[in-house]
Length: 249
Ligand SMILES: [Mn+2]
Image (cartoon, rainbow, N blue to C red):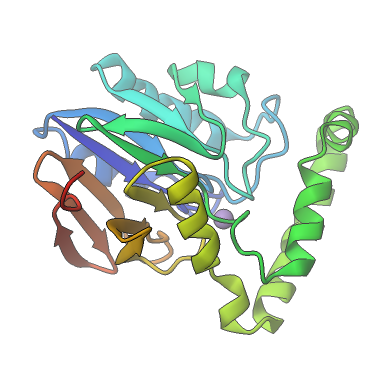
């Protein structure tokens, strides 16, 4: 029994789903029970009524895996936070809220996308607050697809300009906030993406060993985390890292 985690594929019409298809096919002989997508599967998402071909390419691919018994869970990222149950229903995917505590190999793990924890990026947090406001979302979804596409293009351009102008340190998740969440949710493992800084961080929370696992982005090659009884294997930038469960967990 094993569980897979991926995030930050940033799929768009040009990148296609071929890399995802190849990656998942590589697990055909593994005893995968669950696939967790921790946000930013898509570069942009303007609503479940979006009729772009990419949306059906992805749902067709993923429905092949739910048909063979995988449970697929989706936790929204900052790019695809408008993915809803209508779209997930196309491949029997389940929507997870951020944060979520789930049982993996019988142990409690905290799952987050990671953008809310980038506390030093004050400008981004203000934008996030607006985009996550239910009234704003309702208004946005009432616009035509063309109007929403235009907004998404502009938002992406602004986000890219902001990212390229920001110093590296403010674009990372806040280490103290991660520790606080681990303690608050009484977990010893937290898994997130968003920062595009794949790593296995051994941390200590209230004098207990804990792990912070950061998933990698898919800009150049596939990245995933596989978790089973033996522990964690992270593939990122074509190298593999491995660690066991924290002692005492
Ligand atoms: Mn993100």
